[in-house]
Image (tube, rainbow, N blue to C red; front, side, top):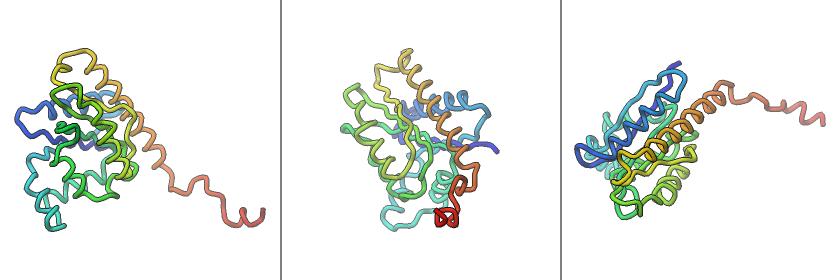
Amino acid sequence: MTRRIVVVSAGLSQPSSTRLLAERLSAATVDALNEPPTVESVELRDIAHDITNAMLTGFAAPALQKIVDDLGAADAVIAVTPTFNASYSGLFKSFFDVIGTDVLTDTPVLVAATGGTERHSLVLDHALRPMFTYLHASVVPLGVYAASSDWGTGALAERITKAAHQLAAAVAASAKRQAGDGFDGVVAFETLLAG
């Protein structure tokens, strides 16, 4: 069975450093997995109107609903946002508000962000990680923050590789958990009553 990775990028400009970071994380994760996965990239900029309409009406347009369904079926998610005022972008937050709280349950997620300076690096632990924890996702320990000065450095490449390996390990562990029927290891009720 081919694994599926959905890469969500909330970059607002073209070209976008946020999109570039998402692509590098995706490529490193593909390299870290034993078998090549299917990778779907979602540019939130392209569906911004659908996200806004869904926030206002409570209903997702077909294109947005397909993305939500793809997220729910994904074996892993890579989520990358630009940083504004030490937090994620409004478009990024709106998208994850629209998808609902059960879509990412137990899904391994790698969080990442871009920003102008290193001062915003705490966005990973103070904004992204709590949001995905609230969504019941399984966030890998290492997130990746890329300031403007990080591009082209070995340190950023090293962080990308380490985070990708953590996501690949989480995907492998998640697949092992899903292999059973959910009742493996459960003691029969009769056995519990027998004492």
